[in-house]
Image 1 (spheres, rainbow, N blue to C red):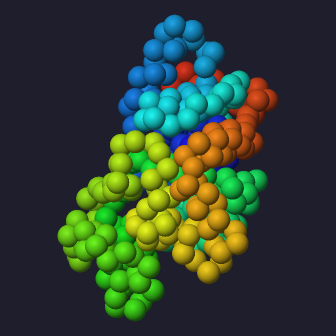
Image 2 (image 1 turned 90 degrees about the vertical axis):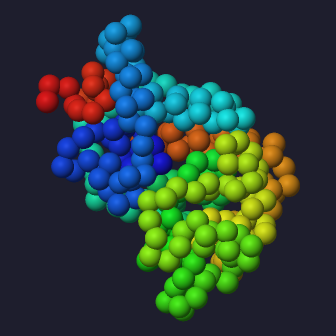
Image 3 (image 1 turned 90 degrees about the horizontal axis):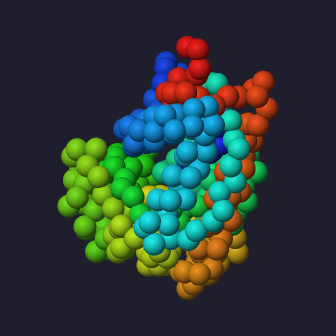
Amino acid sequence: MYAYIQGCDGSLLLDGPSSEKGAVPNNSSARGFPVVDDVKAALEDACPGVVSCADILALAAEISVELSGGPKWGVLLGRLDGKTSDINAANNLPAPFDNITELKSKFNAVGLNIVDLVALSGAHTFGRVQCKNVADPPADRLYNFSRTNGPDPTLELSYRAFLSRRCPRNGNGMVLNDLDPTTPDAFDENYYSNLEVNRGFLISDQELKSSPQAQGTTAPLVDQFARSQDVFFKSFAQSMINMGNIQPVTDPDKGEVRCNSRQVNGS
């Protein structure tokens, strides 16, 4: 989540010993940094000191969704880049093994509600995820779910068999899998359709529909988004705006426009 830690301030891009890149949820998962480097270099060549790394990330998020068939939204600009990176906070990002109570708490802590939670989770309609997030502790849904020595009973049987072939016990946890096995490269409502039939890849995905605590809260939203791509797209666009507005840095005493996305100016 590009704007979750410290707000939308480009802190994820910073290198160094306390870099958020090294946090457990991001290590070997957050990628594409050389692309941001190239965009930043081109912008600095054309208009030095004008476009922040934080705004680059916000724009890149919108463009990637739009190019994949998803909704458009107006990206508010004018953010400055933060000067610190917080690996400890990044280690507390919403996790693939979080239950619905933990997910709601983490989103609420940054001012996002259950609509934001369910809508932003819909970004899992495209992208890839590593086997370790379904086959290794503490996220083991295939072989020792909740220390039962068995699989997660909410997993649909054919999908569980497919995942077991992709992610065998004690296999390579770095192997990548489609988050959405139906239309993995398209931004659409099929993430929610998958949850309806117990084909969510992550525990945190299926919790939105199958948890007892989801009934009357997040589950009806899953149902609504599965029925209507248009409703999902409108909610997702608004939730992306909401996330992009988490504590934006606009005070020049607290932020800057970085010349290099990986380091603060003058370092």
